[in-house]
Length: 162
Image (tube, rainbow, N blue to C red; front, side, top):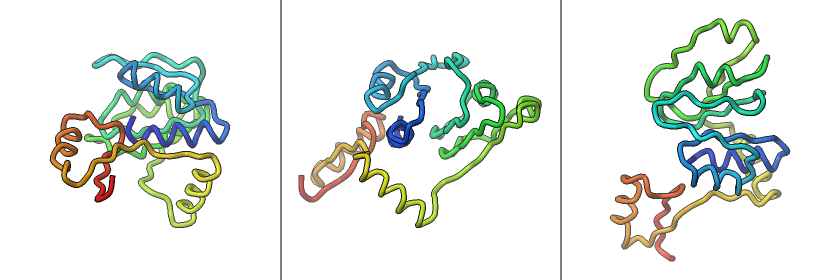
């Protein structure tokens, strides 16, 4: 839920009904705390269960390949799959589900300066903050180990003053 935790906060604070797909119960509970209305836990090597209603927008923040076909089928007509994480393999999708319901795929890494300023303004207005774990500089090695072992939730920050 790394990049997702900010996306959940922005989307829910701006009035959207948010559903989060995750791999663990603790992340599902945290997603609810951040504003998600629904969570779907995806078991390893299993297709995800369908959400309670189709999506207009599906935002993928994951840096790995997933069952793209299932997720595209969760989109409503004219829905958009937006990919902001960079998967580790090319997307493979049948085109029929895209064509029949006019679904789109969009990719983006970062917005321009005006978009970033708007995002920071919205974050300030709605008190949206990243989840970070702060380590003093002398514990840099410990921080690196936690990152390598996927134990940091959700960003590690080194600081001269803690």
